[in-house]
Length: 148
Image (cartoon, rainbow, N blue to C red; front, side):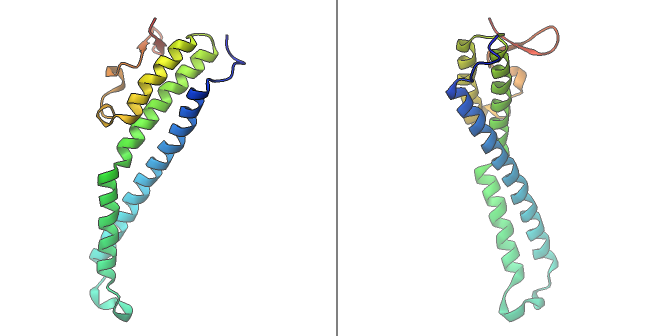
């Protein structure tokens, strides 16, 4: 059992970094979406005549909305979130198994390598977890176990 063992530095770095970034991407996805929808609604609902001092609120809200949806389309924070959170979850479980002595450090680092691909390759973000080769297979109890 490795319960008192310190998580390997490269694993700890990914766990901390991926968790931070998936939180950034999920919050930005919702924030941009909400601001975009509210701006679009206001652009459609605000009469043009209300604009004080010649400020065209309709155009302002339309531009804000367009910018929010453009960022969402190009950056795709939902896809980035999905890749990072999936990689983080798999690596976090593998780390817990390593600490309990259920897998070797070499297996943990192999899973880390596969999780790197999962986190950074957009093509893997939409693939169901059970179809990804992450070095883990289902056990009889339904929990994932490392391949041996």
